[in-house]
Structures are given as C-alpha cells and as structure tokens.
Image (cartoon, rainbow, N blue to C red; front, side, top):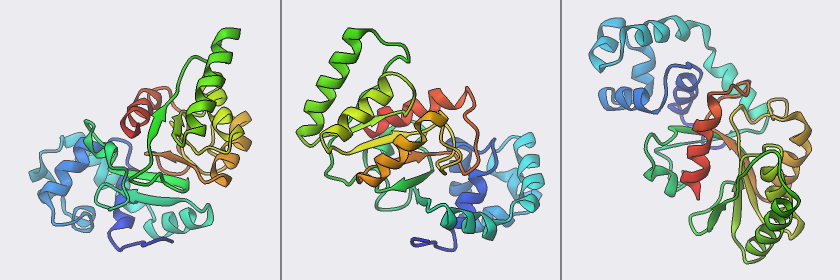
Length: 229
C-alpha cells in the first residue's frame, strides 16, 4: 500500500477507537514522540496525556482487539489509500479548519494543491427550479476547471456530482461512513461513487472501513466539505 510507514498503522488503529477524535489524538501526538509509543503506552503514561479516564479505559480495552496488520491488508484489498495530517499531500485548506481530521481514508485521486475546489450541497427534496439551477451552475463551474465537492447524498448532492461528470469535470464525494464499495451510503449511489473515482476524482472520509452512516457523522462530514473548498 502507498508509503505504508510503520507509524501509519497506528494512525489507522486509533481511527478505529470511536472516542478518539481530532482533539484527543492531538493530545496523544503532543505527549508522545510518535503514535507507535502512544499505542503501546501503559496506563500510567496515558494518564499523563490529559485524556479522560473513560477514554483511557477504552484505549486499553480496544488495543488488543484491533489487529493492525489485518487492518492494513483490508485497506489494500479495497484499494483504499490513507493520508494523515503530517503528510505533504494532505489537503492544504483542510489543515486550516478547527479539528482537522487527523486521517483521511480515500479511493481515487486526492485533489492537488493547485486545484480549485467548490462545494455544492443542498436538500434531498428539490424543486424543479432547484434542479435546473444546480445542474446549470455546476456544469458551467466544472467546465471552467473547478473541482466540485459534495456529500454523495440523494437530491442536490447527487445532481451536483453528476453535473460535473456530465462535462468531464472532477468531483470529490465526502462521506459520513467508510469508503469501501460495501460501505457507500446511500446504496443507490454506489455506482455514482465508482464513476467519480473512474473520472479522476475521489471519495473520502475520516471514518475507517466498515463505519456505518450514523446520524452524528453527517454534521462532522459537513465541516470537511466546507474545509476542503
């Protein structure tokens, strides 16, 4: 798998522990020299990081249950790549938001530093006018070389992705679930996801493989859509 540094498997491991979000991971990266040390740290050291007791207990309980090598193999099988906050190809604008996702899982090609990204999102149920204006605006923007970012949801999001693809434009789908073919939600947009990847775009998420589309993931996903754009 691409540049699977020794440390990367520990980033993936911590991503599998639901209570470890951007802010708590930052506490670990500040305290330990690297995430490998954090992963193997005893209880006494973890207590010095400033993490809450229940979170530390979750880390202690989760570590033996997570097979890091097998997680990397799964990523390779599903052709899922990983980029962390410390990598040069991590999206530049996304570093500037509050609580940047420490790790992104993606299939396809990440937008480059010179790409101009614009978010087009909206309601699931749209009017005739909403449909017309979304398609016409998105097409003309994509024709000018802008990369269209949206959330692969039903409604306006799907219209935006499809409008960009209609004019051979690039588009990025940000998900509130995992990015493997079987994770994609809604199921009716699995084909659209593959088309986005096939045309030089990507589907990405801060959630590891197998994460279901839980309600609380979507507001978090929206900060990534905004932050990329």
